[in-house]
Image (cartoon, rainbow, N blue to C red; front, side, top):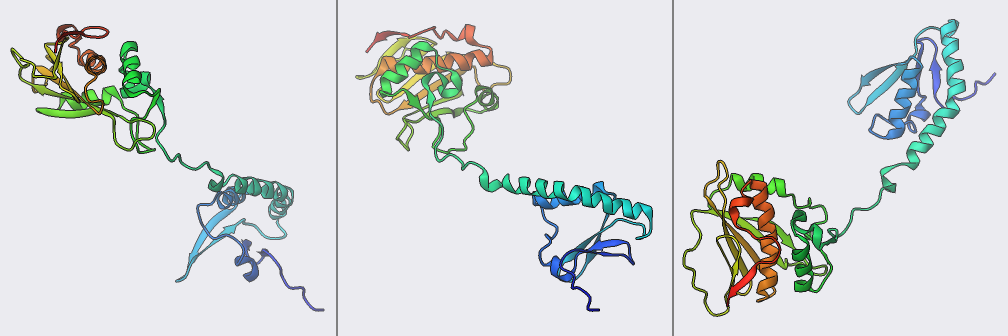
Length: 284
């Protein structure tokens, strides 16, 4: 009688191990990181199988040995388990395939838009947030043009500032919704002393906050005392660089609010002399 040709995985009874036939090996998945393959391995292991790897120059073959002989009751028990569990295995593999990474949502193409109250790590008080909206003519902002950029964090910046030498470190940038260049940047750095007897030039405006505060078009400056442990100076120089070209009271309001948050984080708010709300204009 002609023997029927094997069409799928067969049992190697002599060795009491399971091996795919030559035809099945072309379809059976090799060792990989797919969910379906890992599910198969866990399924066979749950039935008591032991995995053995056989390396060849071209690939590594993995054999799952169940142990026992065909006449052994344990062997027959394993075959019965396979017959009962096979439909469940197929269902699990189909479910894993339907949850493949191809179904994941695409990454955002732009950084998220946020409100003025959340700009610069949430350091703008209510008057300053309102002044930012007035200054820019928009309600929403971005802190970066990179979609995956991490949000501005005040505590992270304070760690950087405490260890900084003289010079300014950027704290946050503010972008308008459709712009690729930042509208404004705030920066802070240590210095030995605030400017004394500052005489404003034409176009400059002086304000009452900190040790010294003024604007000169697109640059706003505030100096305030701050004695922080381990700092390289005793005075902080705060800067706001923006593209508004001369809306002094609005600019100083924004920088003063951020400066108060920085001073509070460093533990020097009380000695800083930074006022609450909008600083009063003195001259200019």
